[in-house]
Length: 120
Image 1 (spheres, rainbow, N blue to C red):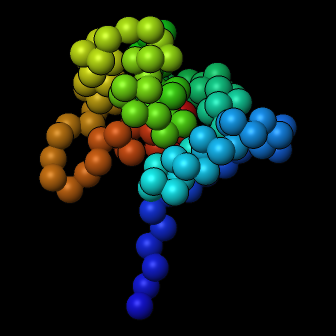
Image 2: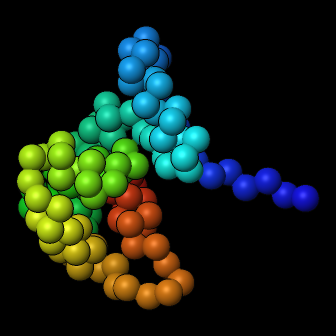
């Protein structure tokens, strides 16, 4: 019998002192989501490499990709950025196109976008 991880999380130790933040992260991981500390995501985002596909993204597309890398849903991203869900969907779709992530049944574009982001 194999066990498959449903979710994972990584928070910096100063973040776990905030009980509300920690509890929210635990609930999200328990629900199968992934949680990465926003500080880690921000540092990775701002460490750009020359020639990266990420350079093609607009600042707003980066604003959407950052919480996506934290494991946030489109609804949570829309709430954070104070925009509508359709606006987030448009930015996500544009991000996929600029990163060359075409829709197919074999790949999960959202995961591939986040991996590109973390590598970039």
